Length: 410
Image (cartoon, rainbow, N blue to C red; front, side, top):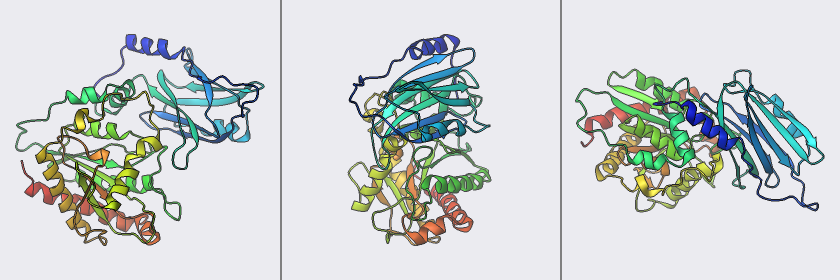
């Protein structure tokens, strides 16, 4: 990461958040009581997320306390049920941010959640409306005020810019590298899809896409690291939710030359199978299946959960700047990977497909999305779980990248 929070900035953030009163609806005597139906905690090295899922929207207020660092969330119209009581058991000893969480019945219809932190932090708290299999959710994201990996990973800064609404504005200021030295390493960004609150597609035997693609991405990363002229990064290397725009922004911030998003998606018909590779289309999808897959992937932000107060600049600020050479090189890269994938698995379509995947919309980075196989197909779900198939897919992606580098257009 390129910067840390200044003390002045920290105090400003704290001053604003410490008095946040986020309840928007008064609870009448006849109001339906809220009920917590699931509690989830997602720790990562970047930030920790707490999610409370409920039958109706939660009315709450929050405050930040210091010496020691704590966060208090009071939820009205709620009783402490067995599900909510389990929240104290959700914290791992190695959680980098949270020391403990306790839920208590503060008043007859008010529950207090006390979060004790291990370090200075700033929170982002918001609610999400029902989507997919999720009902109403209250989300608490806890970010460190400074990152131990600040020198080499821009992710925390990018997430901060996203939450503040500045990401597109900042990204528009990035200039594409020009006159790159001939012997400079090729920078590849691998993007394991989904993560954290967003499981991605789920197979018949409950295999989660987010887990499989992270395993494949790690194998691909290890192979690429062995290449003398390639430097490789990952948008995520743990079970954490990263918004789509932040994935693209991380690639641009690290001056990536290539962006490869790795998935194992699903379709409504379980007989559908085969590997696919997609490039960005600015004129609609190449098939109805491609359109369906793009829509499911583009819904990741709503499923994974992003604050409506986040990046408020127009989506098209950067994404409409996609260059012709970038698009053609994306097709070239995708075709090279697909040519290698056909030796590993049957292809869903014999040629590269196109659709409007949001994660492929970097204006200056050739980008592709690899659908390794259909996790909704029972046979391919089992195959995706095997080490041998994951290794074969990883090698196909690496060989495809190497083939592309010999033929790319400058």
